[in-house]
Length: 291
Figure (cartoon, one colour):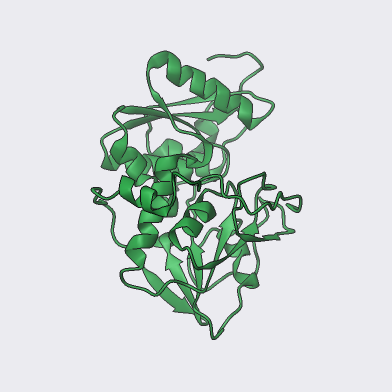
């Protein structure tokens, strides 16, 4: 269970300099190439339908990062599960960039990795590691050596927070600010950005992947999901979602409330394409194998 959180009320992406207005100032001349966000209502809950966008919210809030990047080649560590790599591929397509992925070596790749590889990125490098931070260090060293741009794990970058704050500002042109907003929480990037964008909203998060460290939660009220990260939720909401991620939040949200309650559905899942054979991907490596 993800039940060992540092709840200190501090948002590490919000300080005396980078407040809401300064984040909005960064993106004031930026025009998105993506379609507008859709919202639908289910059981009295207003649902942000980012399942309509390939890569979901990660694609949307990281767009400004790609807009600002001057390097044509980016490097990212793609774990076995997660949609950040899908978002990066979509943004590379939109902004004429190429991506090199580092992935942890394994006997068989996951569905998410299979989808990413099927989209033919510039390169995929498998490395046998003891822990993901090691692979991030290896990937960053590689990017620095070749003059490429290394994207932080989880898209944890100030420009991505600025993108999230801009998304909130755009939503407020058409909708009243929510009384409550619910979302899944993993790295905390999304919830930190949303609480800056929605200053008066009561934030609720469900930790689905890891324990939260100092500064990662901000003012979000956290619930620890007892299901393991890879376990799929059985009580599914009535819309497309990721069964081991966003779907775990739905059961906690108060339904048909007299409040303006929002749920931020981050994405829909991706699967291994039917024509793609995982067994043909040489993903296993011995220790110190650099091939």
